[in-house]
Length: 177
Image 1 (cartoon, rainbow, N blue to C red):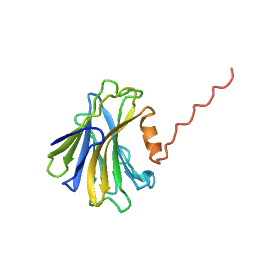
Image 2: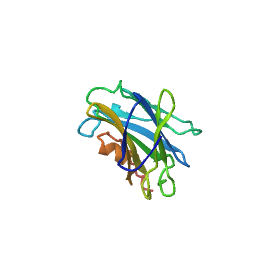
Image 3: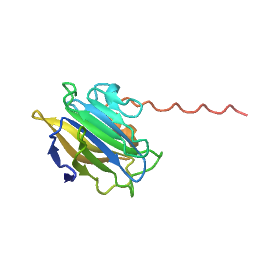
Image 4: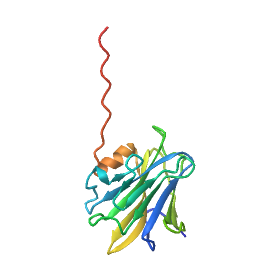
């Protein structure tokens, strides 16, 4: 088992890996399938609790008792997808990562054996994180520890990677009295 630091990477010996992200608070975990330009092909490449499966990538809820996880079956990832980023954000609205140290555990999805762990350091006002990425380099799948924070939540991450985020419609103005 390897304890990863920001920017470090490991080759993946397993074709199917699960990445779970645990913290002292409930987290929303998601995965984005990215092309070489760092963008999703469509909103269908955003895998999360409301859209739990995509080509080669699935979301599993921990149900509050266990961490949520993203599983990547590298053999089933479609051609043209070069990276799957695993993100996390606190479930409570407005909650930051200040004082909350999430830990990602990368496992062989079939045996359950732990391949690596990563705890991003020095978190503060971030409301969402790119925790780790599973990526293809020279025909070999690898995992990289990222820990990049966003102050504008999961919507900020999603839009950065090309997902269309529907903003809630503003409440209609109250009629004059």
